[in-house]
Amino acid sequence: MSNVVLALDTCTELCSVALQKGERLVTRQTLAPREHSQKILGFIDEVLADLDIGFDAIERLVVGQGPGSFTGVRIGVSIGQGLAFSHTLPVTPICTLEALAEQAWRRYQATDVIAAIDARMNEVYIARYQRRNDAWIAIQAPQMAALEQLSKELWLDDGEPVGVGTGWQAYGQQLDAEQRVSILPDVWLPEARDMLSLALHPHAKSVQAAELEPLYVRNEVTWKKLPGR
Image (cartoon, rainbow, N blue to C red):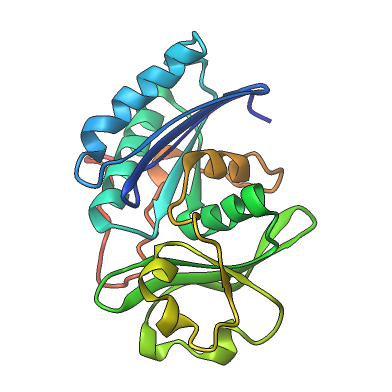
């Protein structure tokens, strides 16, 4: 297991960084939907200074790969890929929806979570996770769907799930007209610290910089890797 791990996420309105060295964890985050590219590198410098280490001490990167804002996803993946290339580091990509589930577990010990991120225009990125043996199982894989297309049977067939993410904040009534889901009132945006936690799980998989790709969940958007890679 890597001893020094840096996580970053810019996929939503929250610009978030977390750095773990052994048992020590430091974080920086702020709501800055149009300033991710200006904020993220400064946050990385700050958390490194907090632990009094240089970037060369980092053994692995963790990057939020989406889904989320197209621009935000591109910024985070591009920066993560650039850092991984320049420092020859492995990267663990993390889905923002699973990070929301992890946050619900960290803060509320929730084990059945429907995570939804507002995709605008009455659409959401949505997935359902259940926690088994200290790991999340995707009961319904991440997808993008219009509100009217979501089946109650698909999402609310059994169990007592909680709802997290900005999708519930924006469209809670439409997603759950029968109020069968308990919406957690303050788990709206994914945080880098939860992505870091997911990446440290024994079954988490890392890739090389050239293999890091965004998770848009929309087929019409294509990703171009760094030039020459």
